[in-house]
Image: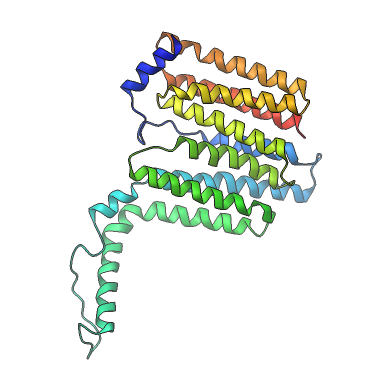
Length: 295
């Protein structure tokens, strides 16, 4: 009955870019802090606090800002409405410059492009472009502070942003890419800032990203989100059992029980978005338990 109810909701509310639930910023920050908790030595040293500060800045102000601006800005709409060379522009070149000469062609190109940039592109996209540049500068500055082993994460994040932009052009959302970028990679960023990669931490990052993906899909009215959401915690519980952490496995079991309890109103036609809002605290609690267990 629960699955039928969500099915009806998914038919009435197709998941698209506009109606897709977004990942709360606090969840990405929490995933980073749990990654740090799983790897860092305690009590921390002064240098550790600087590293912690920079990895939080990278994930929240760097990756978070880039993801938000890149996936919520209508880049293709602006380009479609006003192309750089869709209208002619008058240009007066230097003396003795022939219109068909290379200098004349370059001058006309610069004149048309600068007019389009000034009149069409910058008034509509100036703010997001500035935000992206500032966020990219923060990430670049962090490369001087944080360990080089975080480098592949930046490349993976850029690939996920590119995938999300391509899907946006097709009118589709990217909940899986968002969950992996802002939960999975966030956990790994916090972990790799203080330690080398270990199998259990990688597995947990993927498990919690899977759960976040399910929550985002459920918020968009897609039935499969329930399986992904609950399956992420079930797999995390299995990782704890494999790591011989029975107490942590019990803690994840309790989080799973609380999460499933939040889903019961769906069988009476409850709002999936409300269910998702109550799901995030359970997922964050599961992250905390797992991080403490694998230290």
